[in-house]
Length: 184
Image (cartoon, rainbow, N blue to C red; front, side, top):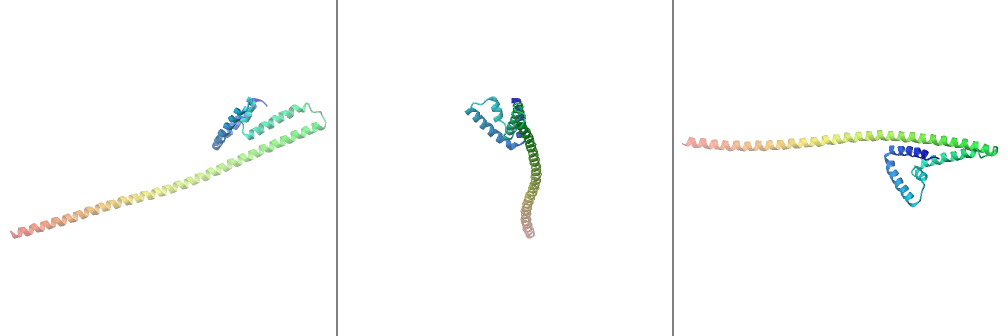
């Protein structure tokens, strides 16, 4: 297994983690744990690359390395029963790899479908919340408008009362002056 292959798998792993915001926290935790592990042990650069991969990509890397090892052993195996077992092993290994790939694809599709359903439900819920907020804001605006009208009516009633008292006072003064003039 070459370091370039590891870096390629790591780049794919990093790309997968960047698409999921929640994985960023997990990645940070894993990186801190990996740094602690590297500080505690003396690790080769090859091992550092492997440690920084996610578990699923470590598994892929391990399988790839094993298949390379099996391929390099093929020339060493004598033809005969072991050669037949090698072919069966390779076939079963290929079948397992295909099943794993199919399972990963199905899980990815399922996660994508669930994410889309969640986003639709979330957007629907947000629309409902916005409607409720708008309704409550309208109620508050109506209450404020009613309060302003009540204040205006109260002010007008106070002005009306003052004008009525003032007119009564002036009427009384006018009557008093008429009586005084009639007496003179």
